[in-house]
Image 1 (cartoon, rainbow, N blue to C red):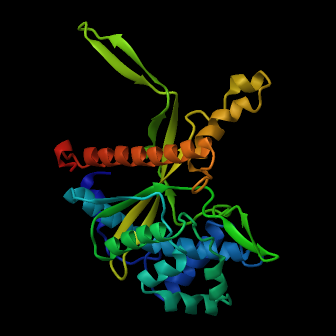
Image 2: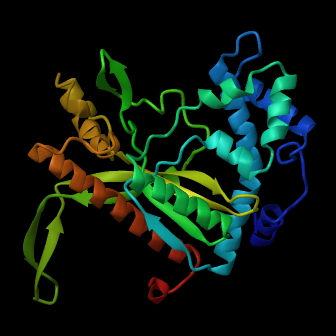
Image 3: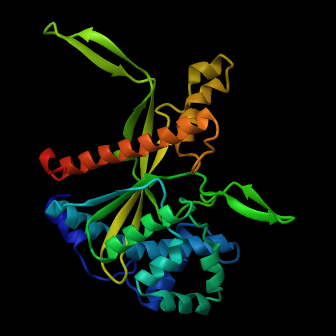
Length: 326
């Protein structure tokens, strides 16, 4: 596809079944996603199936705005705000996106006419607990406001597998349990493995002589971790601008060592996978022990390195000189 064709697609404003905001189009999209994405029909569908189908129908209506925004930023070489934060306490996506698209009441009517409880669908969403409090909420408000003000921006952070703990009160005491916010999947994100980056950790330096006889030093990393980006559209309030929140998941370059497995060391065969994925496993690991302090430091280094490498990739994509990277 050439650039002219790409522009025609990204700039189109024709409403079709995947972008129209009227009741009939939303109903049809919801039922299509229930059938073709969730693979269910009403007699077998769970409350989560209905939520996921509605979420995908809403996301379809955001994608045109999201892709058009990204295309405009790329074509214009827009100077872009990059907001880095270890926390993003976004809150539930579904209700917020319905408000931003100005279709909250329309969708509520659609679900009611289909015999579904709209409030239960909203409550079904697993809230992404990617923040602990004020810092995470501030970051979420900033990226939401930047999209509303139509300021080119990207948020960068960590895609924690387990977010802030799930709280239960038992006999008057707080009991902290694992927050499994990803257990049923996240319909709002899109994985971008083609933009994965390498992050080098630990190791040592060594001296060598180059081809000109000069003494040099080089860093030999102890291990390498891949950062895999996951993108979530952040739509502005009643605007056509949708910025991107890019969260990084840590992954081992080789998640399974077949030779080690065949020697009978079944734990050792997946040790690299376990060690690497710890970087994005949990929000704020306990840092009372030395290992916890090291893990927090590695988490920060990991997502900052991933984000800087991604910014440099974007500059190359836009054919911008490095001296534009202020």
